[in-house]
Image (cartoon, rainbow, N blue to C red; front, side):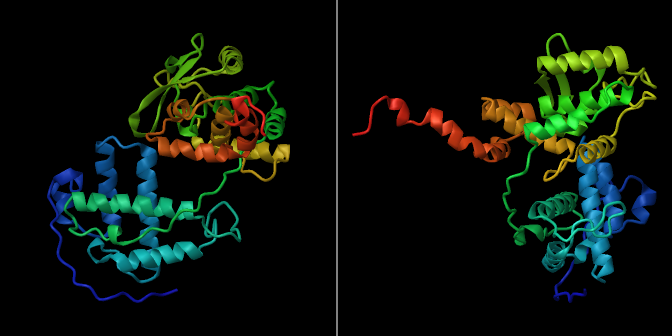
Length: 351
């Protein structure tokens, strides 16, 4: 696939010697560049200094790196002063034709194309990087406001049924250290609707079992307190007192540890859940920590929780993000209307 660039007039950017940490020393300044590869490292440095989370930084830099790789493969410019609306639209067209997991090192390619949500995640991340370029005065003009991003398709995300949850936990051997830990992880995620990245960051001094609370560090460095149900309190008490190993490093006293006392990783939990999902024969839904989060949110609403409390539970910065789960729970609207019908509850008979 090859593309022709449109003619445009470019300018030489002003690159500040110290601004924002793009150029950290005179040596770096001497080999300053407006090539994407060089600037990705500068963004990472600035983002860290601003307190952005590792996950956010990785998402942005990985997306920009992917964009750079595409530009190189197509013979398009990788100098940010020469990348404009045309290159962005060509990249969007490429993403819209790309198959899921093509060129992936571990997963097999699939027939389905990338979802509009995945494409928008790539583009929003790259757009954030370009906003940083403007803020650092590396470029003057940001082409992204001139590009209309593809409208994401709203889909009802599958969640676990009660039967599937019971199938999932039934295949776990809870007589072993790792088995009981995994059992505790799955049910804690289901009860609290935590992101897996938040769960693995919970330390022992952030857990108050007697009060049924745990403290997590959410996106943007925002702390919040999460309630825990009585059953999960019992499970966590047993895990801590019977199965939890001593931490390898006392300064990193995380709640959930590997059998040799190290901090668990997000990838390890995802692989663990995939394995249990295959063993349980669960079909039609992705067996992942994030599906547990979706399931927890929807069941919270189905069981009588309100959207404002759910927003605090999920750590969403806006109610708009949380309303998505109201849509996921809409399969119960008819059932709810049977008991909450405004006319039926007026208490009179139709004439």
